[in-house]
Image (tube, rainbow, N blue to C red; front, side, top):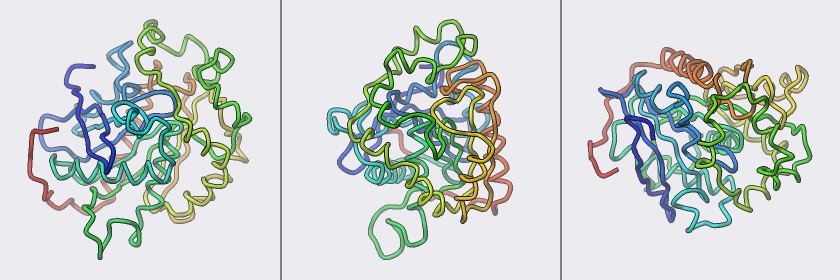
Length: 308
């Protein structure tokens, strides 16, 4: 782990989720929850090949608490859910984990979800359920997580550029170029260090994959927070031509703002490459814009504890 990054554990209903956390020197402006893609883990957001790669250390320096979760079926929860969980079940687990976090740490104005690839599917599913009539609202006894402020998603589209059946062979050599793109996009130690980040893809994630194009449209229409989508220059898992991007952007019928950016000099795994810092800085600019458009945050009710 990078300096200032530490492991934490969050309770998520019947699951225990492992995570990495970095905190600012003072009260956080907000909390960024980073959600990894398929076949990786929380360490994706704390790349060790170069000091500029880590999202966690950058976010803490900019005044944010950053928490990179191991999604259900990864990290500590792999033994509890060896086949993983459906997207809807993962969203429920993340909601519980964030409620646990907010009861123990100051979270600032609320939560931003920064997600990659399959993690973007989870982020959209979570945001689609985060409505006034959603779970944990008035009339229930469920603890509420911090308010959701926005979504920043990379490496995810609506329409596949490949046969979804091929996702079962995510780590095979034939998909190397789809996952990474040109070698020159990455610091020299990347592929030695990345072995610690790679993980098996739980079976239930693969089952969800084929239904994603339709699920994207439904979820996108229910998202009520600002959204930023980023496609790498060498993104090869998803279609991102002009017509496709216009169509998927139009699916966000309830979001106040939707932005689509391109990241030059990057492959699918943007947050492990030379352009990671540029991408992460753009994400924090987006988060700052979201904060600037909100009323001043109310003081948190959380009691500071040190048991995370």
